[in-house]
Image: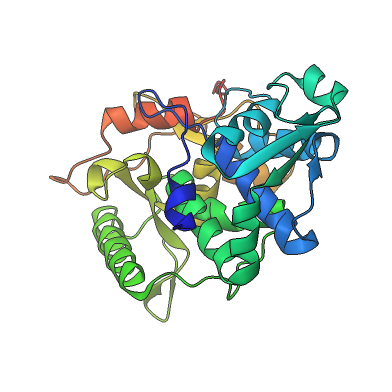
Length: 296
């Protein structure tokens, strides 16, 4: 059994590129519990608020019940649910999961594989992260679910080299196009002549068929890249910066670095070079940005 491919193929609800990382988030949570506490059952009563928080922070803008992944992950052969009445999930309704004292657990075959291969938890987690989330969010998700991936499950050497070359080429192209300057705040720092604190950000995430080209890239400083991937910042159809009304920050730094960006035109690439495609801007607005937007 190739468990890495098995978890990468977890069935997700999909339509027009919409994000549905609910089951991957639950599996990452379960792997974190395995790494920290072993493979014992996870009562829904203990997981409910944790899952709600994970879905709110790392899921799509639309609200989803924590009961949805707890029940539906059972269809993928990696997760089992039991109740006081015996094996089998009572459904995705919160009331039923609570009343039946439901608990979930990793499939025994997967638990045996994890016990036999200390590196497997890392390989599974990295694959789930790669196919479901923007890279800038991976450390935050690991911290939130209690996963420590340092030295746990190295990426195969050939795949790592291919990914590294792909990322490096995209970065060179995007940073050059925007003249090594953040498209949101115009930060352009260097250390001993080398660019520092600037990223090539995907507008439509690579995990969701986002291309490695200028039609899908922006040069952003590290903080604005993170805020863009978290849905605090976005782009309007008119290519103006949007700020989520749900963002709160009362400090001078928050006002200067975030709130002052409302309605500011995004920096364009050098003349003759392709800007961000409207379809990718629209995808980010639907799947990542936390609407509604603040008004200038």
